[in-house]
Length: 264
Image (cartoon, rainbow, N blue to C red; front, top):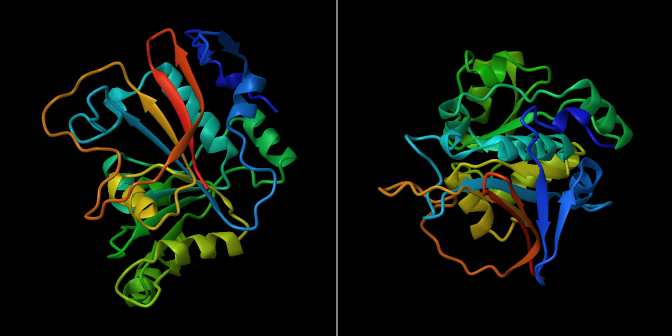
């Protein structure tokens, strides 16, 4: 199931760190094993993937790309391959210059063996429905993206975007808001249960606030950014969610890669 192309040309390797000081080199097969979703799930399993600096900053000059390294990009590709759908806030997708997900021939074969479509769709979450037809995420993609928005604007958004996206009304009691539980139910109905949330902070914070984030994959960059950089999660509420560290890896550049699962 491993994707040979996941090895970066600069020879990036991961080392699994043990609690007793033991360390093991992580080959491709082990990497896929460490990040596998549960074998069977009747509901969506929501995984967040974020990067932060040592002092907690989630971006430099407005985007997260400046914090990443070769290992982070390698893991990014693996997590995308394992997911049924990639969920991201529309503002983040626009600001980060998202296009549709890209899969190598090997990754497509891996996905077929897992019973997945060859390429996972991008699902944009937006309360306002402000998604433009010329965004690369709509124009440079093999699969039709989804737009998860509120009931108040779903019809107008769908009419404006036409066949460029599938627009889904995802409101609960309030037709002016996107209900994250309703959004996940809509994805589950389409067989998209392995969910990868790539942010931004507002969307990730919403999943946390509603108790819907099952796990967090957090890359810690060996960098200080200072200033007023945003955190990986935002929002007006505050919750205390216990998490269990499933594993911790490092690489030769000093990045740390933790996977944390929700307790209970």
